[in-house]
Amino acid sequence: MKQASKIIYGVDISKKITPLLVRDAIIICFTQAHKEVLEDIKEIENFKSNKDFEDLKLLNIKLIITKIFNDLHEDFNNPTKDSLIKVIEELREYACNFRNQEIVDKHTQEIMLLVNKLE
Image 1 (tube, rainbow, N blue to C red):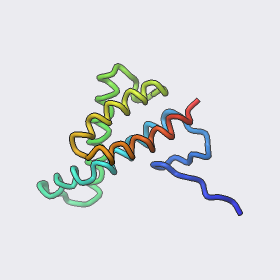
Image 2 (cartoon, helix red, strand yellow):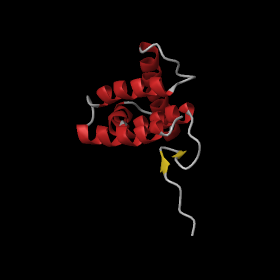
Image 3 (cartoon, rainbow, N blue to C red):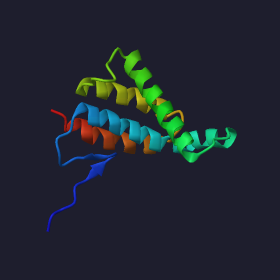
C-alpha cells in the first residue's frame, strides 16, 4: 500500500523542493495565519465579492513578504536558502505582533521542514 505524501502549504515534501516553492509556501502560510487579522478588514470594507477580498488578502501578504525581501536586500523572485531563512525570521517577529508565540512557532517549524529539504 502506497503511503500518501505529506503536503506542507501546497508543497509535496516527497518531491524535489525549490526555493520558489518554499517562498510560495511562506505566502500561503502567512495568508492562512493572518486570516483573522485580515477578516477584520472585510467587516470594515464592503467588498463586492468574496473573490475580491481573497485577492486583496493575497496581495497584502505578497506586499509584506516582498517588502521584507527588499529590506533584507534579497531577491523575492530568486530566493536562496539563506535569504528564505532571513525572511522567515523577520516574518516570525512580525507575526508575533498578531499571533501567540505557540502558533508562530508551529508555522515556523512547518516552513523550516521545507527549507531544510533544500539543497
